[in-house]
Image (cartoon, rainbow, N blue to C red):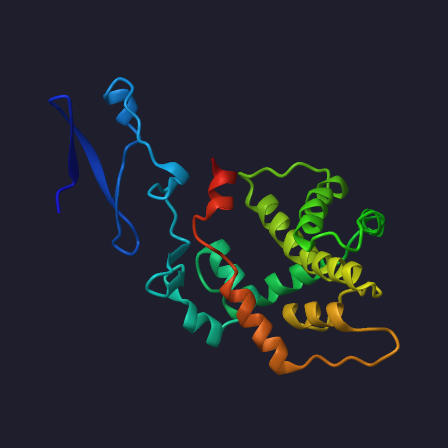
Length: 241
């Protein structure tokens, strides 16, 4: 395959670099099109044929039923890994070693607590409020309780931000569910794994003993892995643009 494509406009030819993706998919690099042609742009409603950036994180082909994170098939990951292991893979590019996972899991567990004043924000929502609307608002509110700026060029700062959001988001999800159901809000249990912790916060009530069903926990784990990343979808591209 040629390294360049030829575009002809009004008798003039322009070379556009051809790029190959991680799955050998082909793209045309039009980043120089406007300057080279003195103003020509592309017209692509909804950006259905446009990639907003280079990424080696997720490959998705819904028509063929293919989903890969960092080159690993979703089938292998769902069968042999857990949610936090896959999160580590997506974020850092490789599956964690035993020691790396233990540290990552403990760091996430250490952040699984919310400022009690977050309850006041939740109390302000009507019970009929959509969970996604509440989660969006509460996620933004977290910055008010963590006002220190994050240096995106600092690995330490980025790591701390990652474990904070992973740790706190599971509690947010459970508390939003409790708001909708009118049930008490539970706290995280440091002795449980990530998904089991979510389940006990969702479904435990004070007057009954609650034991996590391992089959249900495994099913939820697989579901979370499946939805852990969704390639360059609309929301991702919107944030990047």
